[in-house]
Image 1 (tube, rainbow, N blue to C red):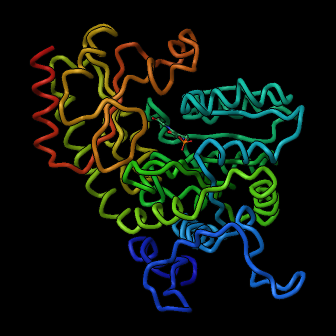
Image 2: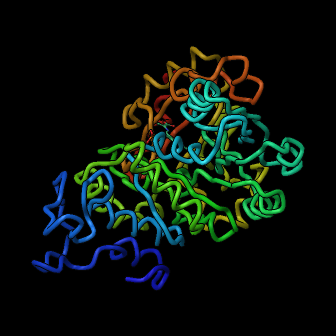
Length: 385
Ligand code: P1T
């Protein structure tokens, strides 16, 4: 099935996955093999060794590329290994401008791994294009964007970033984990590379860790593909198969995640024990208009500040019953966490405070359960608080 031929609901089920030519199996087989027998030296069928290429992984890569509207997809063993591979496009002395609100692990790998290799990083509020522009220096090679950001759900104008980066000869990369290609396609706005933690919505079932990169640029693809093989952080065939299986229901899951999240964010907005609700679908979200312009839906993540202390927030996490206290997001089951103490604990407390990540902030990943059950659960927890 060719790229972008059909709508995303159809491509999620079929792209990269024709029936198996040898057996007719409708489901792509798990090619659980490390190597491939050659007929003679160099005489192979396109597969030599599974770090380099594996048919189950190729199916996943093609599917992901199609969903993002890109020409090339690459799969990795985690979101972090995908992100690290983007940085392998750079050299010592290069500079990166990054969103100031990013997943804690992204900040950690930038600051505690790549800084030691001579890369430098400037964090700005990328919702303000002027801030990105002001931070770009002659050595800047990459602009790193999350939109919506983790966990403050800030939105960056993708077309504006893409234009600025093209103007300045800088690579633009967007971590599209929160929106997924179902709601947002950064490449269609001119962004160079899309990154994913496929652990989240793309896999969708909290049963595997994985990452991906998608691009339409030949030069970046060649280097990223080279580094995928050279560094070797590739997913196994069973993980690729699980993600392919999860992707088939991406469209119906995302619709329900969003419907539930919209209802819950409205309910939280009216609650007397909630100080602030952050959800891009709310009209009072500061970048709601940009979100409407570039997203076809607002996703399933909500952050909110309870009207109380950090201890109250922690107690609230103990009081909910359906929402599971856990890191991660994007699975069918609802999760709840405290970013300051959990997913973003590797960001120093003063840096967290500077960027507005408060101690009473709670993040929920709204699952696809019955929305009234979810609201009742939050309601009983607030009553007990
Ligand atoms: O966990 P891993 O698959 O390596 O992906 C890292 C990652 C990258 N980008 C974003 C936007 C992410 O949210 C993550 C992982 N985030 C969590 C585990 C979390 O609970 O926020």
